[in-house]
Length: 95
Ligand SMILES: [Zn+2]
Image 1 (cartoon, protein in one colour):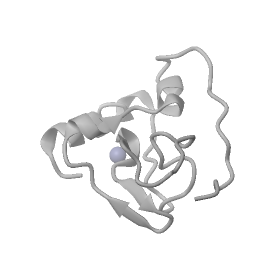
Image 2: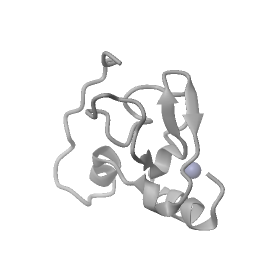
Image 3: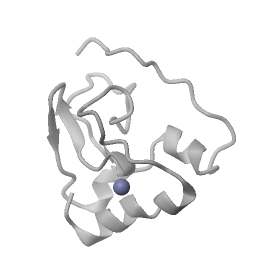
């Protein structure tokens, strides 16, 4: 992710206490904008706080523009955009 608008979208939640999700490689589910998507790859969107999107279990690819970036349900809950924290599977899906 190197486009200015994508970087601004990524950085904006940090003053609210939202931490980066790109630490630890392609860890499921935190790096995925839509962890319930099947098939899991290729993902349609990148999670803004995760920067790049996992395109395989060990490989990332950058979002090409801001329209490919989303704020996932977990980040939305952390920013109080939604009232409840979503329940998302924490184990690797069958891919
Ligand atoms: Zn960051």
